Amino acid sequence: MRRHIRGIGIDVVDVKRFARFLDRNHAWLYRIFSGHEIARCEAARNRVERYAVRFAAKESVVKALETISMFDFLDKYSWADIEVQVDDLGKPQVVLHGVLRERVRADGIDGVEVSLSHSATIAMAQVILVGTELRKPRECGDVHR
Ligand SMILES: CC(C)(COP(=O)(O)OP(=O)(O)OC[C@H]1O[C@@H](n2cnc3c(N)ncnc32)[C@H](O)[C@@H]1OP(=O)(O)O)[C@@H](O)C(=O)NCCC(=O)NCCS
Image 1 (cartoon, rainbow, N blue to C red):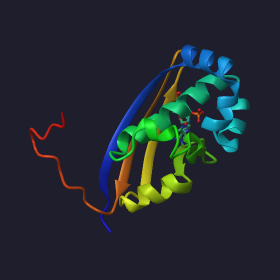
Image 2 (tube, protein in one colour):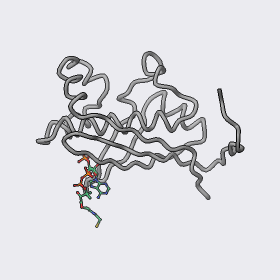
Image 3 (cartoon, helix red, strand yellow):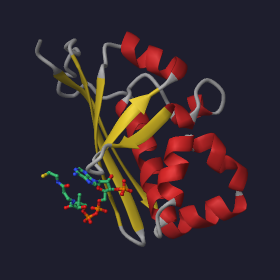
Image 4 (tube, rainbow, N blue to C red):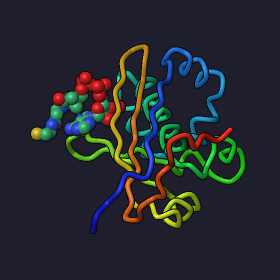
């Protein structure tokens, strides 16, 4: 079956700013990241870079999803429901969980492609959502105000 691009998202996180955020809001670590993500990040020398790039991936997914906004993560959904897992080669993949997963599936989206990159100062992620259903294309000049 043909698969179509259903959305794209990109996000950049300032690593030093994110380090300050984590220092001041330690409890948030467990609200934003899954146990799997925490284990992967804590095992690394550059742990904050890795947390930052995973947060960039989560924000990229939300940007790519047209029907969900950042505010929905205050009550409806959990940031930990957007999880970055890595395979044996270190290649990342995004796995969705819970109500968010159901919502995204109901919108006809069945896959998330992701790419991550980070340095001591910048962490960035890009995602592409894919699905079997074709989205109605936006027409030129169809700008929402
Ligand atoms: C992947 C690779 C290019 C990373 O480049 P880098 O400039 O050192 O680091 P970047 O900050 O740009 O990217 C790091 C991120 O790339 C991702 N990554 C790692 N291996 C990857 C792979 N094989 N494919 C795609 N992405 C990968 C990870 O998410 C990593 O972040 P994390 O360690 O926090 O999970 C480098 O590690 C590499 O060459 N690895 C070997 C490639 C490989 O295994 N290829 C297999 C095919 S034969």
